[in-house]
Image (cartoon, rainbow, N blue to C red; front, side):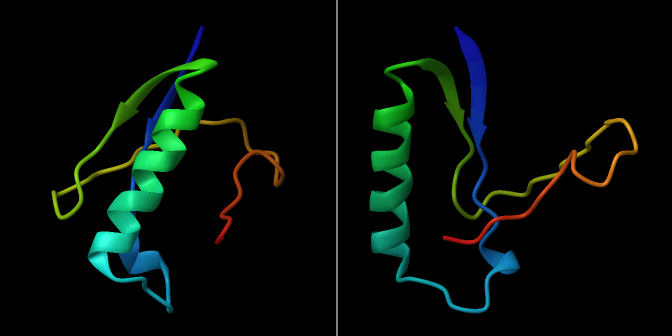
Length: 66
């Protein structure tokens, strides 16, 4: 299995859902991903730091808002 980390970054959105709804959505995502991946999940409201070390091609990292 491959690893997936669910890391909520609410500050990236300009249209936030209620916290209760956000937690429910993240839980559903986690539940579905666990069928095929090892899933780790960061907590809402905790301090996060994200460091990406990737090759410099423009298509290597993308932000998606759902």
